[in-house]
Image 1 (cartoon, rainbow, N blue to C red):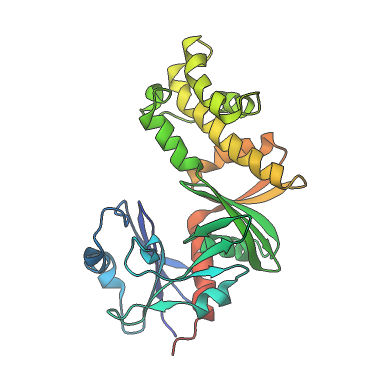
Image 2: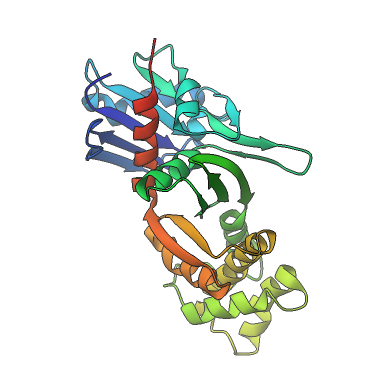
Length: 300
């Protein structure tokens, strides 16, 4: 196919659409909203999509949809592929959307074994894209977020991954527990309070006691109310990184992929555990992954 392509990364909470030049990879335009899949009924998805990108579509414009739009809670459920996989494997399993010409939904990825069952949708594109951006086929990748993903790649293929509910637990503790009451309002990131959280999670009692210390430390005047959010973040991100380091004791470097706001806390937590990190913008990684899949795609 020729001409530009449209890439839509449609998650539970956010809608992100990009118009990309197929040859150069340049971003020509973007549309972003907080209208994720969660509040939409399946019959409303097509009309919302059309309102967002109708003026981008031409006779030779391909549209690729990734993320939770391809889940059982989304528009059409696309298969989740077993690892190992690469961009070619994703391209060969694209699911066409009958209602729209030149439109495909990307598959997700899964790990199903006796020791672990895990799934993801969308992050596989970011991981493959990050490998492309960094011109490497071998890496451990950390994709922080609501459900953080740690991915192991070798030989240019994704070989394994683990999901940790760091972001969702942070929101639950912050907005739905007594411990999180002082952290309801948005506060700037506090590296000192975050460091206290990193240290607390390694003490006897582990993460469950460390979370409660968000309250006891505040009551004893060691932690100011405006520092509680960063402290809780330090506990949960610290536990995430500690567990991943424990599962791979020789891990000393990761590719960190995500939003700018998560760069500072994750860099601090990784450094605390003796791990170096190279950061890649999440949109850049997603777009690079999508371009690799589109270039490998040979529609009938």
